[in-house]
Image (cartoon, rainbow, N blue to C red):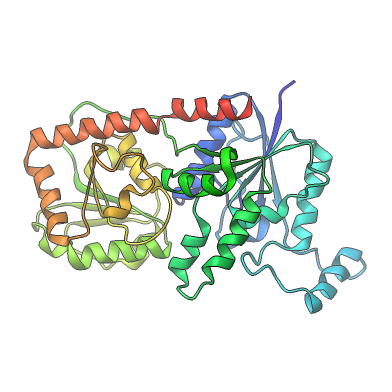
Length: 379
């Protein structure tokens, strides 16, 4: 009998909007290739806020369930009055306002009616969806994506780190397995939670191509509209871009374009259904990240096309090796510029870095590696 997975991810993983949705989609793809039947659960209000459609790949996901944070406004229902009354005495979850009692009830209802063998929750702050009584005989897995305490600290320097990290570890401990995608976070969580912590890095199919000197773009940056991407690309244009030769062509893709001024030789594409064409037309990917936690999906994706990456030190967060990985890193704008110029002007050096990128990707982030790790976990 085919085993069934209930996969919770609050947004539409097929939206192609950002690194987190891309990674969720690749995880679903891997699980499907392992032969599982998969239902997807998301949050109705989040879909609407992000203008996500309900379009899913039916070759990967069998059913989509959208959970509501609050009951319909029907005053004759018990759920409506229970929700209304609870707002007077019950404080919202401080780490996730969307995690209401009603959404927990909706999730339990789906689980009870469909009888799943495995539940996979994405993000620690959705742990409250798990009900240890009704789901006690089901394999429960949390995919962390990030070290949430550190991520929240970057956004709020007054955060009570000790309290929040204690909550994070307590939540992760409620699961049978904890998935990390970064070697750094794997090391931290394993010290507290032991062998239940498994590191499964992001994966992509490889898109390597033979050397093609006729590239339209010298540099490519892909970024969603989150604060870390915005700060990063603004730093690049303020500090590195003025140092580069005027004839360098740059392509920026994603909603981060909304926060960039028009410049000479800089093309901006706010949304693209597929990045393949743009990566194949580019020579170098840049990742000038200043903050943020976890492994950078944009870097892995660039490596999957055999592109060398020039970035800040944050670009290789979570890598098992900080060298010989196809990435050149520095936080110094002048050196950043020099690394870009060296790759563009020295073809032998460029090819060496390209081979490093391909080898490191194949050994760490290939789809085959991810399939093997998930198979070992779920068998």
